[in-house]
Image (tube, rainbow, N blue to C red; front, side, top):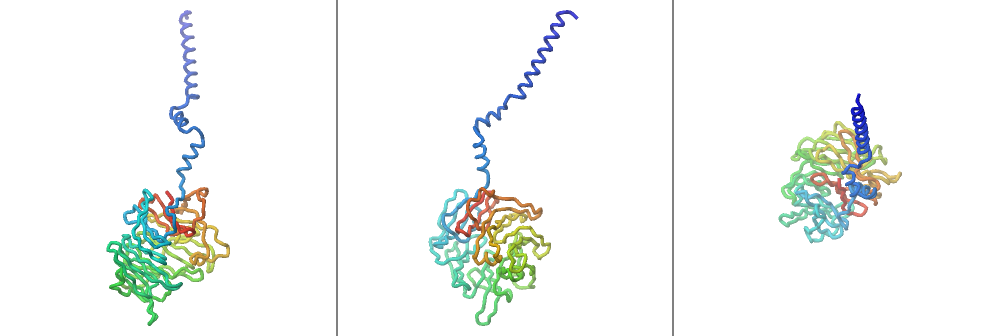
Length: 381
């Protein structure tokens, strides 16, 4: 091989080695432009932590005062409620948190509001004593109202145009379940009752009314159903102590909370079908009054109570306001049983005894009433 060829070959090898080493250097030590941009934008780890933390769900107070019976408006854009102090009605815009007055009329001693499904009419409750109340119907579209007849102790909506109520006849001592127009006119008896204190709920998407004895830790709750215009009375459930119920929006499933033993402390949550079958425990010690069904009728959002005294009787002591709870917030998939924490513990900076849970239209927000201070709160999901 000639000297010229040897020199050319040696030079080529040296050049290739240099290019190879330079390539290795570039790959190993050069910073990507996107990383440079990120570092310039986030100058230190504190900034990164702040951005991550800002995305974590927090609990926000929406009212400055205690309120009564909040509910999502029919269009899903606002929350309607009454002031506990004055009984005046308001509407809170969800998007900008502004409040406007619905009614300036003061309702003294107002205890609760039962809204029609279109949110245009209400049944208001005013306690007379510990055992009895007066009920008033009011139509906001016509600005008219009327007092319902005496001797009612439970009233709820069957539809926008009908109410269901329990009536006690002081002369005959007869208790009946009845249906009527919202002002109490055109009433018809559905069935005679043997139970003294009951809860009533229309079963969604059906022509049935369900009713059950008020939850008592020392007695098994009797849950029954009957057609609106009379018919066969059916028992759905009757074996659980202190049981309470919440229907899914399609009427196919029923959420039940009960106590494990008579006079006991530990609550348990379970689901069943609308006939009372296929019962499945969810392994969650909470009450249905701390729960809300999702639109898909598979997920349940719930507040998990804590700080319950070891000598408490549930649900009696809670329902009679002898105790309050210190809640955390969760969601459970009833199909898989998977539980998801909604708010990290370090984001819960005060005590919440949550009730009246409900979601906005797209389920991006969960609202609840805090029994401790009476204010309305929101969790962004």
